[in-house]
Length: 87
Image 1 (cartoon, one colour):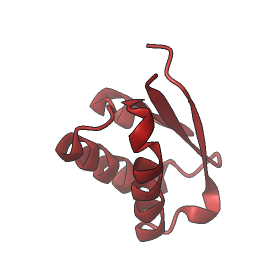
Image 2 (cartoon, one colour):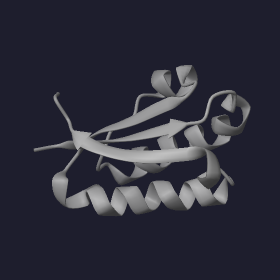
Image 3 (cartoon, helix red, strand yellow):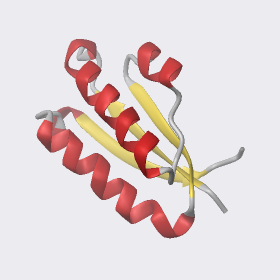
Image 4 (spheres, one colour):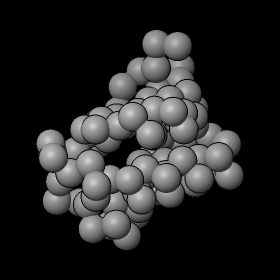
């Protein structure tokens, strides 16, 4: 069953999220194991979802997201959660 990773940020950090969101979108476009909508990236205020991740790739994709959070100095304001993808 596909999974999704939810990235939740503390409120009032939209300006800090923008570059991260775009880098995340580019990474998933090139990898192909997960989907993230550019429209959702542009609208995101406190939450972003990466959908349709094959179950066997969840750990790798979580690690990728964590690396990008570190690169953008967002680790202290972000939380990750993994859920079954209903789509």
